[in-house]
Length: 203
Length: 203
DNA sequence: TTTATTTTAAACAATTTTGTCGAACAAAAA
DNA sequence: TTTTTGTTCGACAAAATTGTTTAAAATAAA
Image (cartoon, rainbow over all chains, first blue to last red; front, side):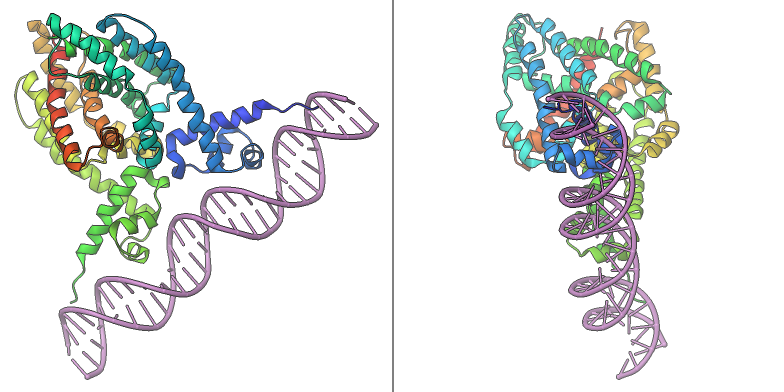
């Protein structure tokens, strides 16, 4: 039995992920995906019947990639300060692996109300509530400000980590950075975010 | 001389702004703009010859709306702390006026390399450098952390202010907020950002 | 070699999206 | 009133996009 060339199918999925993430569903042309993958548009329909199907695969793959990061995050016991650093490392690690992820999230939020509803009802509140618990400990010790919740905190962290990835083309153009310099910028930024957040909640 | 119905033309531009901001150029259908404006698609071509033209008008209008905010911002002398609060109020005020603005910025950055180049070379560095100057004063006094630049700071502020607007549909769905509750959330968030940022740079 | 699978190119149809045209209509000017 | 100018709509043409089909290679397994 002749084997299937998973390589091409995989190439298409990777290209589709890139293009769908950047441009949303309506904004992408299947031609753009084929070009990105370096194959003919016929091949695209050979492995994935329609644009909708391919998008669904991308959606599954992308959301699936978040799960292991989440469980690794939740499976460890430490104090607030260390856990915040842990969250920032995990989040930036995910974005380094999938730099288009923040774009994808922004796009589906504004394009697919059904997916948003699914996420809003299904996504675990584990992280905000764990943060609330750790915050409560520190508040009693008087080491952190009162007027902040776990939800505020995770929103702050997501904001700080995600925006640089939303603006990569701009940040590169602004200072004429090449890919290597961009990575260095993001590496430094991760550490700066840690300092900023830890100070930001300190009383 | 018969008068022109500026009302319809304006309605189209407002609708186009909304749709282009949310979906980018490739992602928007002129039908969606016409529906949003409550007029027929023919009217759209009557006032604006092509989709490209209309997008250009939206681009001009949107970028034009930023100028007064910027000049109001730069025209005042105050210390670091007050100026940071001033920036946050100005930025959130702009986003309140144009809630789709952060989306628009994210879209053109990933869709229009030419606009990005134009912005990257033309946009004033007034704000980062003014922040640098104010930071230098405070660093000498020893009241703020050393390892932060004006660029870091403005990126932090933009991140914190913009992301909630990128995620409005999600934030509304998550807690079943209506429009009024959403406004209240954003109002409170503005104040929380001020506290967070001021603490975040404090030594 | 023979066979089955993968790949491409080209042509094609179907659908969606964009843009145009002409007739009808309204309102102001003559 | 008639004419002119500006506005609106429906029908239509043109272009772009998606998806299918065919034939012909290239490739890998039997």
